[in-house]
Length: 402
Ligand SMILES: Cc1cc2nc3c(=O)[nH]c(=O)nc-3n(C[C@H](O)[C@H](O)[C@H](O)COP(=O)(O)OP(=O)(O)OC[C@H]3O[C@@H](n4cnc5c(N)ncnc54)[C@H](O)[C@@H]3O)c2cc1C
Ligand SMILES: *[C@@H]1O[C@H](CO)[C@@H](O)[C@H](O)[C@H]1NC(C)=O
Image (tube, rainbow, N blue to C red; front, side):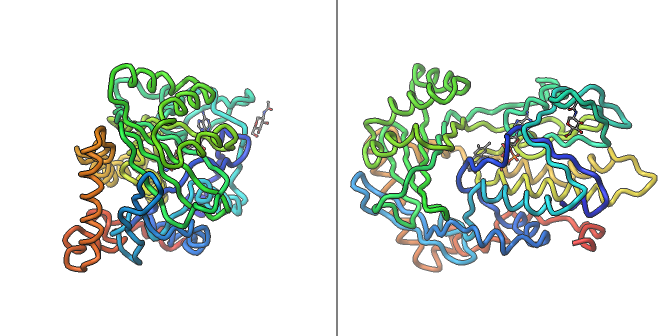
């Protein structure tokens, strides 16, 4: 959207037949929210708020063990001030860019091949056979990007597996589903959560950290096995976990948006090669464990547009790609650092570990209700400060257009 206002002609190629509603809550934190505000989309984002009131840990009867209500401008709760679904966020961005006449959206289309990529231009073949030439190809087809594989050698792309799987799907809402993010910690590294959405349904999430070799192999093999096999595995592994498991597993096969997600980070030695640049999860998937996937994608998009808009007529576009990477990479690398105790710490294996975790979290919830302690654990930091001091660079030309 920022680039279009700078006069660029843009074609967006999307594999899906239309905008798909898959995925659940994504975080837009700190500086990324500044970008949303600059684009004039802040009110839209607020309009799609999931209405979640906070996060609570529940026992096998659904009784709350510890509650973290949301607080304005604070990160004391796992629920943020701007809870929004991935599908709703995509829709907001789509609507905003669709309003610009110089953008072309090609649904049901993929890029079959990068035919040529050098200093001057990039030539691609679309899935319908048409060959087109562009000044720049931005590759943003996600964590498993097929295009990335065509342009970058495997040694330059590092996939870091976190031995954790997440399964998302939507179920009909029942009377017991409330406005909290209800988190049930089961044994053998299994967690189930239920969250409200603004569409009258409930969002279920299952997470697991396989602990023995056979289980690790079963989950790894499921990645490419397709939905039916994935559902079978989830049923088999979660049937005995308790709480709402039965109801959710029964509803799973009817869900329109079943999504199976292995937690893997992507780290690339360099994000661009000649006229091709990777962006978002393709370039630097941090995993939902960091809660930063969407924020990094938004920030990256803005900064890349900012650097391109700033190019002088005598400058080569590749100098903008270099400047962008130099300015953004340190923050990306910092964001991808996941504390060693996560995700294992929240996936207890044994009953005593679960007890320790639950009582630990109860103590933190209780202590966080005291302002001085909350400040100590960072609870009173505002959302804007929540980016470890990273500031959006000033792009004067962009700022003037917005
Ligand atoms: C289905 C799904 C659900 C998710 N749910 C969550 C969640 O609940 N919470 C969370 O924190 N993060 C979630 N994520 C990750 C989150 O979307 C990203 O971290 C973040 O938004 C950055 O997104 P991205 O645009 O770089 O990649 P993605 O969100 O992965 O988007 C990639 C896009 O490229 C399209 N595509 C894929 N292959 C091709 C191709 N060959 N040609 C053309 N188009 C292609 C896909 O259809 C998709 O629209 C989810 C991702 C997906 C794909
Ligand atoms: C393929 O799709 C592009 C983009 O919509 C279009 O411009 C082109 O004419 C199509 N080509 C063929 C051969 O259908």
